Length: 69
Image 1 (cartoon, rainbow, N blue to C red):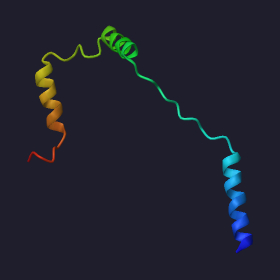
Image 2: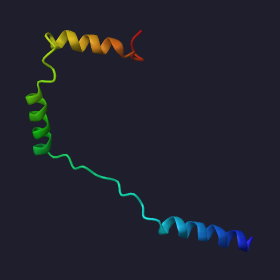
Image 3: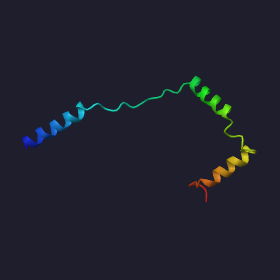
Image 4: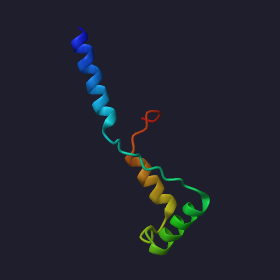
């Protein structure tokens, strides 16, 4: 059992010795979001939508909701 425990400890040490991937955290603040929205508006991504309310109703029809039949 001691040998197994020692092997396990060696395995853990080897895993800890490997450089871990750092998760990239993006801090979204108001100015960054405003900049992203401005870029979206400049690209005119939604120009093909003539009636936004009708488009929204159509999109919502595609998603089955548990509370609706």
